[in-house]
Picture 1: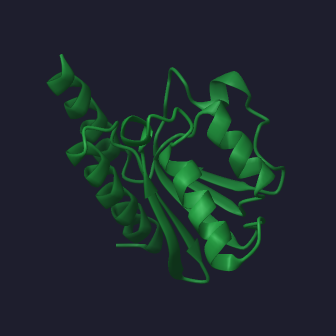
Picture 2 (picture 1 turned 30 degrees about the vertical axis):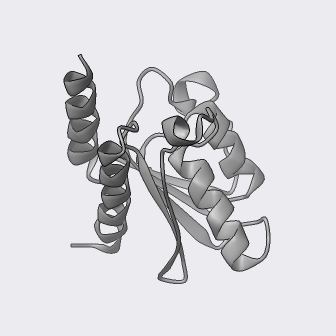
Picture 3 (picture 1 turned 90 degrees about the vertical axis):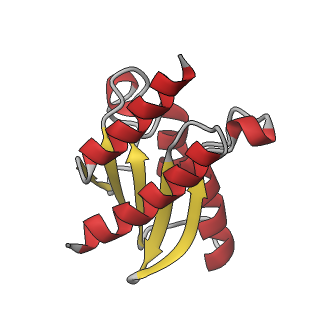
Length: 144
């Protein structure tokens, strides 16, 4: 297992926590210098807050851990492609690398604003995409 898969598995574990809390199962982790410094999962229902996405939770925790708002030397792993709101937060925090699992064909930033990220942010997609998509599919099928 390569390091991208290792950290995406941790993000998937966060997504499972969201699933267990009846939240849309999206998880995120922030890695700095080979160490996980923050974790997050969707909490929009729990907090009654539409901005409480996994990425937002992880970015806030990472900035707190590092004592600064910029995350240039960090990698953000998220199970689902970020929405436009989260892409904006990723841009403003200057995340160095964004790695996501499955693509969001309805709300993903690449459809709404492909240039939303900071120009220096490296993007890698498709890491454990099938597992991330299956978890989301199962969640929504159980809702119906």
